[in-house]
Length: 245
Ligand SMILES: [Fe+2]
Ligand SMILES: [Fe+2]
Image (cartoon, rainbow, N blue to C red; front, side, top):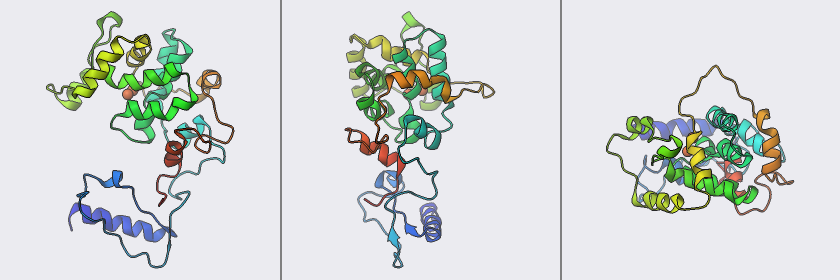
């Protein structure tokens, strides 16, 4: 068996244990299989397909809050909480602290590539425009130094992507645009307070940011994802990632 066949067999075995059949979205498997070829499905054996809560995941409360997503879908959110704490310690505004707290939620719980754009879109309906703008543009700014605030190209990127990595033209264009924008420094401060290495012995609790989130994140009363905002469906996908439709 090839690695992919093994993975499919393991998945089939797992889905046999659940009472509902779980089918993964194409984005889970693209790259592991040829997306031009038809998707092979194991026989359903008369069982129903997954259309709600996946029992392999912790169940979300009926009306989930941003913090519930942190607890049940983004944990452990150490990088985010430590970055937000650093921003606060550095005297940043509440908008910047909130932006730091959520700047990488796309990586923690959704989709990694272009994470700044996904993250901005997720929070856009619930935060000040400046906050989502900053999250969107930290995507590009992080690849470019700004000596005036002591931000250097991260040494970690050389290790991760190689010394010859250059961002794609769309990132370069986004950087040029952001650099001349009135909110440039808000996005830049996300990069400045972005902690690449953290002390695992330092504990940060979400409660530390309860006041800032309370004042700056418009929590929908129906629950995040169960409201009708333009990004509610994205939160629902994080909550129920394996629904058939
Ligand atoms: Fe990031
Ligand atoms: Fe980050």
